[in-house]
Length: 356
Image (cartoon, one colour):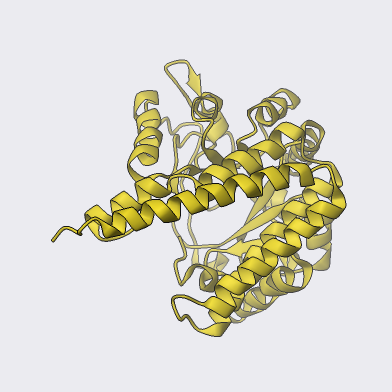
C-alpha cells in the first residue's frame, strides 16, 4: 500500500532543514580551519549535540551503554580530525574535501534519494559500499584473506566499476565508498586507474585500503590534489611483525609512504589484522604512540584474523581471552585517548551490532 504523500512531504521538509544546517556547519567549519579557538568551540558543540541526540534523546530506545559507545566513537572521530588539522598535516584542499565531500555530501547529501527509497521499498538503502576492483597485489602476505597475488589478474572492467559508483549515488544517495583489494593502486582497465575513479566521482569520498608500498611522492601529491580520498595503510605491529607477514623491507616502505602523505597533506589511517602472534604488540603503548602520535595516523581499523583465504590456519586466531583484552584496550583508546579505532567485532555496539 502506497503512502498518502505526507511522508514524502515531511521528508522534504526535514531534508531542507538538514541542507540549511549543513550549509551553516560547513561555513562555520571552513572558518574554524584557520582558527584554533573557533575550531575547538565547534568541536565541543558538535560533541554536545551528539550526546544530546544519542544519550539524552535516544530516539530508538537503545540500551544506555550502547548509546554511550556510539557517543564515544563519534567524539573520538571529531577529536582525531581536530588533532590532524591542528598538527598542520592536512592540506587546505584535503581539508575542504573532508568538509565539503565527507561531511557535506556523505553525511548531509543524498537525503531525498534515501527518503524516496524508504517510501518505495519500506527499508533504508545502504549508506556506503565496499568494492574490490582488482585481486592483483605486489605482496604475498601470509594468510591473505583475499588470496591476492601478482598472478591473480581478476579485475572489474572500468565501465562496470564506474557504473557501480554511479548507480549507488543515483539510486541510494550514497557518496561514501570503501576500496579494498588486492592492491587498489595496481588497478588498470581501459587505460584508467583507481585515481581516475576518484577524479571522476569527485562528489564522493573514498577510503582506500592499501599496503602503502606504491604511494610515491607523486601519488601522494595527486591524492592531495583530489582531496576526496584517505589511504588506510596495512601494518601488522612494529617492524618485526610487519616484515614477517608482509615481506622484508615492507615496514620501511610504509614509513616512507607515511612521510610522503604527511608532506603532501593527505589524511591517512592504519589497518591491522589482529592475530595470536601480534596481539600483545598492538595492545602496547609503543604501538599507540608510534602510529597515532609520532606518525600522525588519524584513525585505525582492526580486523581480527579469520581462517579464510590463502594458507589459512587456526593457529593465528586470537584466543577468547585475547579478544577480551583487545576489547578493553580498544575502548580505552576510544574513551580515554580520543582515538578513532574501530574493530569489526569489538566495536559492533557502536553500529547496533552490525560488524560490516
